Length: 254
Image 1 (cartoon, rainbow, N blue to C red):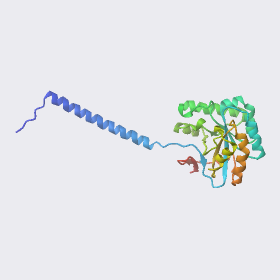
Image 2 (cartoon, rainbow, N blue to C red):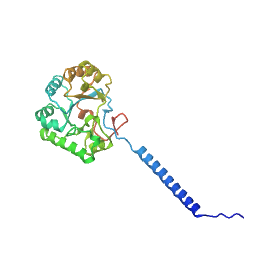
Image 3 (cartoon, one colour):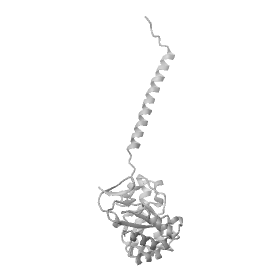
Image 4 (cartoon, rainbow, N blue to C red):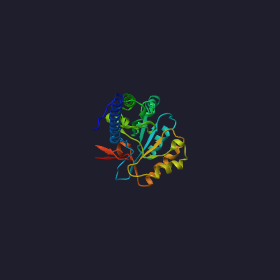
């Protein structure tokens, strides 16, 4: 008959192995739990375009700094009887109050583009709310209305940005067509950028301070109309009711 003799060293070794095994199991379980949690966290996507059946689209302008071209853009929009959406930064609103009033008076949407044009995803939840609230308040002082549309500066967002916006009963709106006017292409190139991927429900991005946008705008409007499209403000493009966005950012009513 054989007897198992347990020495002090063998007992310590056994205990160490047992602890190591428990730790390994715990780490493995934690890793799996983290992976599952990450996999089940859905990405929240803003509105890039709208699921529309009719040939309708929206033109939008971001205004963050200069103002030399705004009057000319508004004059062109008047001439072609087109209403659009202007996303304004709070600092811009303070600097050019008369332009803000004129944009609203002419029937264009006045949207929120943050208070100081930061990268929103780098902010905490309270800072995000402050950026939205301060800009809304400045616009409301001049127009009597608080914006319901928000566009993140630089197109920068994460889940918390989108959830903060929707939590304030606003729409987080991007674009599915970038004119690239901010790169100063020729007016003809701007037109091509705007119409080559045009589809029902499209939202087009332009800027009020880009070099060649004033010259391109009449051509953009004509090219869109020649394709049989009607141009409306984003507030008229977005259908009312509960909605979701697909992986491309297309807004679809539930």
